[in-house]
Length: 252
Image 1 (tube, one colour):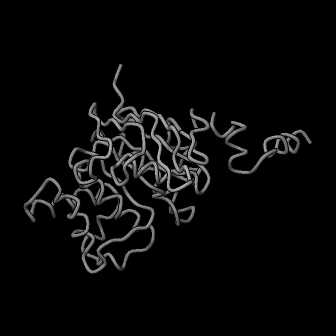
Image 2 (cartoon, rainbow, N blue to C red; image 1 turned 120 degrees about the horizontal axis):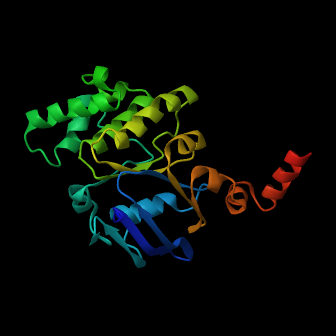
Image 3 (cartoon, rainbow, N blue to C red; image 1 turned 90 degrees about the vertical axis):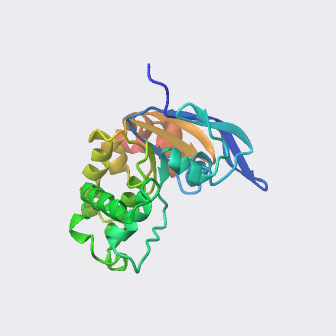
């Protein structure tokens, strides 16, 4: 049986009196596309920061590719094959799409010409091939999301952490992005994806496994169908008694 690519063991962190992440354990298997969901303020982005080294946990361990990387700086994790995107997309606006993607490629490729060539190849994967020479400032929100994804992919990750890569997109843009995300895992490049996402259409279409975080605690895990039917998950999103009310409405 394959070993997890990423293993979190009882991770916890508090900010003052707020316990942002509490005793979270999960395994991400290689070659999978999985999702972390939960209501706003649940601690999802904080958990990503703990995984990737932007925050040091108060307790618990992060194991990546069989090595304990707890608290290791993000740039070392990136070099080892862990990349992440951010909710707020901030491209280098004055540079072209090609140059922005090359920033990621430079992690492993010091030569400018080679980094720019790698950027072109990654741009094709995410649907930005026709925009390589446009300034990043001219991209739409959907284009900037693809650019953020491309820059992370250019680092040649083994594990890609996507933080709400679909946020701010309209339904058509989401539908166009779903096959791009699916292909990242299925194209044979060896990338594993863990995504934070609020767009349940994407979670249902993409994720093989879902973890649900609420108030810093994992409250459910399973397939998308299993977790969306879980009473604890329904009430975390809609409030106490919501599951019973929904059952009553369906029965009525």
